[in-house]
Image 1 (spheres, rainbow, N blue to C red):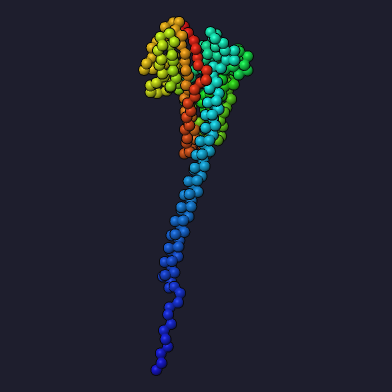
Image 2 (cartoon, rainbow, N blue to C red; image 1 turned 45 degrees about the horizontal axis):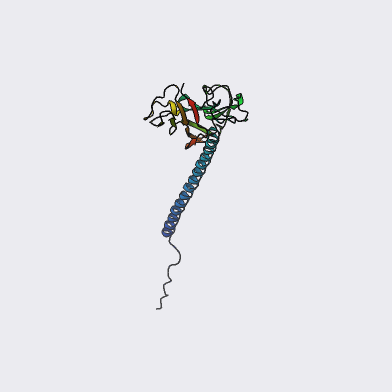
Length: 244
């Protein structure tokens, strides 16, 4: 009696097919998860880069303008600079959240109402002073927004005088603004400076002014995206005066 040769099994069994499908689904899910995470990470990176760029742009505007504080077109030896006297001199007020100053923008040698400038945090925005009558009151004058709270929310804006120096040309003493916390005193008035020596009436003083800016903000559309930028400004025009 002849027997037919056995034919080998072809294809996959149902169990093998189900196992293969399960493995494929797991692999697909893992790849999809990685892809989604990558897209999310790239999106967050782009948001952070956009916020950083906007904050840096504001910091650059502040830096370029504050650097001009005290400029006087008619500067001459032994003459008092009208842009660095009481009422026009650079001041940091409101606990470091506002800075006011003047400079001779139209180069006519005198202080005009359109030459009072400043920056401050107002609500969720940074505002810039366009005109005014003094540098001692942050509510004085005409102000205009520099940032838009519909895009970026400004969380904090701080100005300090850390690193500024005062030289008494009579006693040849020099001290630097130092110490912890928000230091806002002008260098020659920084009584908290570790090497401060009180000048006496008639002493000739030179202030080498340095302004430090810290700006923090987050995206209006995503409060989790927060960035801080800093800038250190060397004011080009030193303040030279005699102690009253």
